[in-house]
Length: 105
Image 1: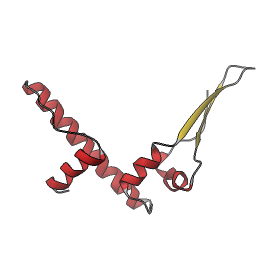
Image 2: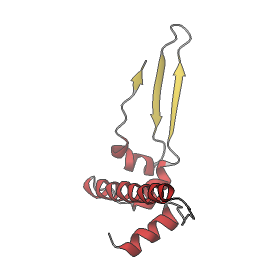
Image 3: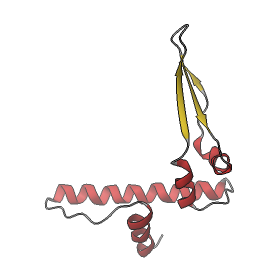
Image 4: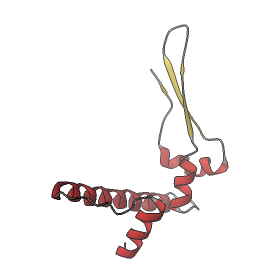
């Protein structure tokens, strides 16, 4: 991934902007955070390709923001049921990335 592309992604897609830090520790933490964000973005890009999802990473992120997970507490025994709702075609397209089985507790 080229440096220019990393900066374009971090400023636009991930909404990260340059920060003005005055201590070495904060500068290092900011650089580390930016590096981690770029690695996560690149891994998501790889997973989108691997799963043959016909969407860009940006569109996957936009769709993921609208996925809803509900948790229902059963009144008779107090157990909880968690369900992730994939309501649209875009949600269904990225469902393999979520890898979240239904759970009962």
